[in-house]
Amino acid sequence: MKKLMALTVAMLSGSAALAADWAEVGEAGELLSTANITVGVGALTGITGTLNAGTEDLVDMYCIRIPDPSIFGATTVGGASFDTQLFLFDANGRGVTFNDDAASSGTLQSTITGQFVPAPGIYFLAISRFDRDPVDANEAALWLDTPFNTERAPDGPGAANPLLEWSGGGGSAGSYRIELRNAAFHVPEPASLSLLALGALAMRRRR
Ligand SMILES: [Ca+2]
Ligand SMILES: [Ca+2]
Ligand SMILES: [Ca+2]
Image (cartoon, rainbow, N blue to C red):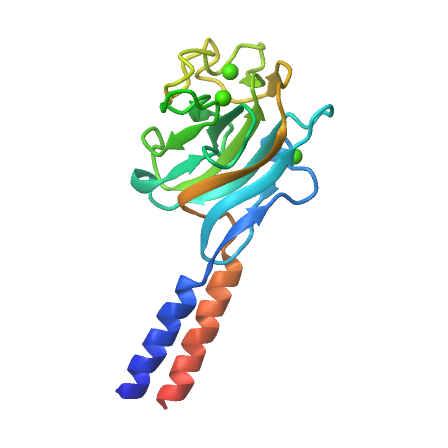
């Protein structure tokens, strides 16, 4: 029994350490087909990357998992010094939520929550340099530009349609960290594998 408790403690402390940031690999694209697919163990605590000035690096997109929308969040407040926008799309490229400037006065960085996320699952998180915005097949914006300080579900003329491309130039640029709350890697295989390994170890020890 003592042994089992020790093992349980070890497993718990092990899983507590299974959390990490994702760092942009190569150049994250701006569409679902070219997004970085996050792969890792346990909770996804943040995403670090760069939107380079003077290049075509205007949007970086990442595929993540949202296990529980009611407690999900993402923000660049405190994680970037340039004018960011944060967008969330579903697995079909339809808009879910967006914020340009967080509600706190004076900030140009962005904060989104799970308030418009319909269900747990796979989503695509995009960061863009203000004012590069997603448009549909008719060049209609999925979201209106204003009000800047409000997190909004799609409300533009293309609100009902999936993302086809992005429109508009990018302003200021720089490196960023998107702080994530209650997000997970898209591909959690390594976690399952290590948990399986721990389980096998536990069974062996119990004999
Ligand atoms: Ca980039
Ligand atoms: Ca902004
Ligand atoms: Ca905009």
